[in-house]
Length: 103
Image 1 (cartoon, one colour):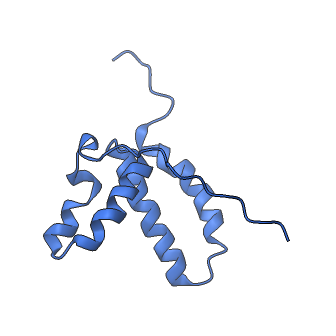
Image 2 (tube, rainbow, N blue to C red):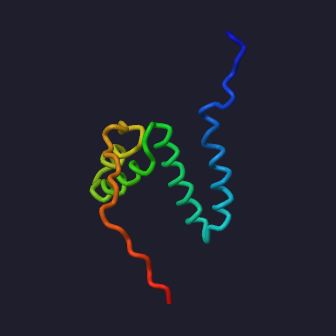
Image 3 (cartoon, rainbow, N blue to C red):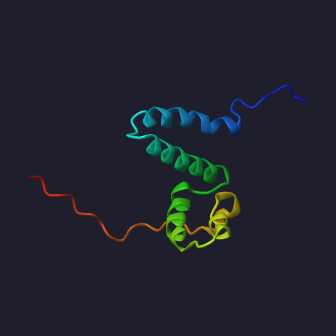
């Protein structure tokens, strides 16, 4: 043993972001809304810990989720069941949104 310890453990990384998210959840309009936010945050952290690009994973998830019909289909979409290279990288948008007219 060398006597050196890592200054920041991997398991503590999500906690720092959680504290910021927790303050945002104070303004949820309902308990159901706060629970939904917590569930989405949990999936995001799981995707990050499994090596996924969070944006690419959520985009993939939202494309594939409507096609899931069985419990096995839903489980196959969980972050720990997919390899990061199985999820296509997000492509830059080809359309540009025009700014709304100022009234």
